[in-house]
Length: 365
Ligand SMILES: Nc1ncnc2c1ncn2[C@@H]1O[C@H](COP(=O)(O)OP(=O)(O)O)[C@@H](O)[C@H]1O
Ligand SMILES: [Mg+2]
Image 1 (cartoon, protein in one colour):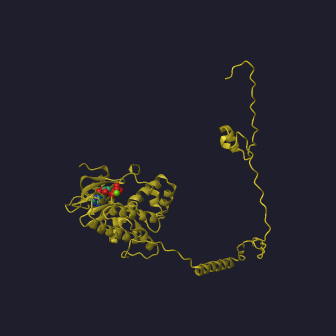
Image 2 (cartoon, rainbow, N blue to C red; image 1 turned 60 degrees about the vertical axis):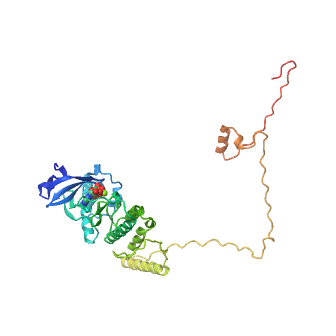
Image 3 (cartoon, rainbow, N blue to C red; image 1 turned 135 degrees about the horizontal axis):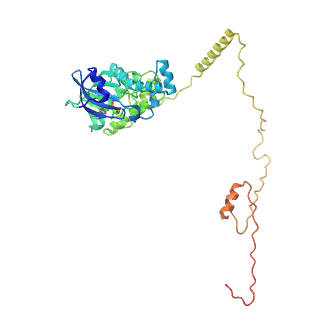
């Protein structure tokens, strides 16, 4: 096929020898089947910002470190240069994550080259050598589903131990390779210790896996691996081999009062020493809460029955007019008027109907 614009520079550099066909167009990228260094590979070309559909990107980029001060400032200001740098960072992260995950034993496509916004990587294939299907394209047997689920949960644990959360993990971003499932698509991956949304993304990732595999094995549906592994990770107790049960009960936190007091005293001591070193007078003690006005103790001996009885004032009975007894019966204008004013409208005296005297000789109606 004709070489697409985005791959021309890689062909000129001799990295890509042939572009066979487009493989897939996802929400973030266009993926081509190519020949690179004599092997069938995949070339992932990232779409321009306007052509993408990935939402709420800032939630993912939060906490990412930008070493270059100029770039960091420009990104904060959202200047044209800053946006370009942000764009590059988004793309770079995939290559970086793939390299990191490969090193910790998570199954990812072998990265080959990352140049000019294009990631060239191993083509994941099925047992016939064709591009591997996504898990979403398969129907699984119960046992098979349970086995795959277990393996993938272990991959998520390994990722978390490497300080990463996928952020978009689901049956659509896992390929069913000949040797087993392979995770793909990482530009939105987040740093587990720096991104405030990391826990939320992890729970969603694991929730997606639980829901998908739960379709083939009901027993998996109630497992809570996400919560369990995050709790262990937060306590610094998660290792790639930590056994998990899928059951999770949040531990009630006990407040260690004595160590809390010790910490407060330590802080006070530090503060005092700092002020002394600076030649400042000692800090004023914190304002004490005002003592409450003394309450007169009630005589205990007095029994309830012995106390003088207060007489309740009888409630005044509402005057009722013969015709217009309640507000509901008033006309709409009167009603709204009555609702507006806080004082009740005095009851109007009923008008007496005057009986007309029939003149003698007129017919009755
Ligand atoms: N290494 C690979 N081997 C085989 N197919 C791949 C590979 N990488 C991507 N694909 C195919 O391309 C599709 C889109 O790739 P993905 O990385 O998920 O991009 P997007 O961010 O656009 O979803 C995948 O669903 C898969 O079918
Ligand atoms: Mg994808």
